[in-house]
Length: 425
Image 1 (cartoon, one colour):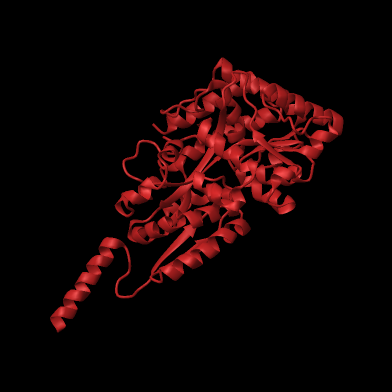
Image 2: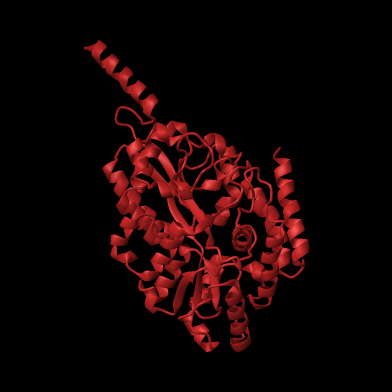
């Protein structure tokens, strides 16, 4: 009898070591972080985790809260100290990040091939995580930039709210007209320090003009071209019609201004939707908030910026429990609740069966993700992706503030990117 018990205990220990789960009725404790506004995140994550723990009493999940800006600035410290959360809502361009790379777990060792096949091949293509072998990242969202506009502001300026700008020239004309007729900023520009949003705004226009990524596969700049200069010259023309003190505003600070009719337009992703739904209800199609495709460059190509995020596991010792949680978070019901709570667009066609996605504005995001050419976050192949945002932000801020002309800014930005790349060699 004693021998049988001893063998059973040994087997339990081996199973524990192999799977990452605690043995003999013990509970595996893991932490999870979905960066963002705590109220929004909690509205999704707290009921989801409660449901997960009810179905998995052997796993105890602690929720960690942190803003995007705070996480961007502190995650290297967490990883270097090995105190990072076990499950993290991550960026596909930071899989090679030097502080995190060695910690990110290959989930193909813990999740079935059938699980990965549930995610459409097109989605994997959109959120290409580079040339890593294995599955280190499970895509949860593909969120594109669109043009938001306030219909009341358009009407007050004598613009047709049913005919929003479709080209750069029309965007410039609308911003100028709003400013001159209403004294309101025609368009908001997010230029706050440290949150990576200004590079994404300027990068959109560069992507559209050059029809390429901002950085190539060797992390060298591709925008120091006549087409790139064309983009900055356009932004120089737009500059007089933006809000004052742009470096005090991120996307989060600009959304209430658009909601309340204090600016005319804003280029933003679906993450803004909850702000407007809170004020006008679910049916934004009938509200003062208009949502349309981003205006396109003179080359006529349908190009937009796309933000992609997904789940990673960051610790081998808890990888089995972390993978089980990720699998739960990607189940259709929980995925929909995440998208609805945090404003992400539908990832699957099947999500449109949910009444909450019945409105036309959701199709704007979905159709861009499916049919437009997408360029996203930079630094995908770099060990220090955040360094490019920091270096370029300094240049773009000086440019947006009128301290640099387009030629000087383009040269300075290219030199800044090259300097980051050279330091990584």
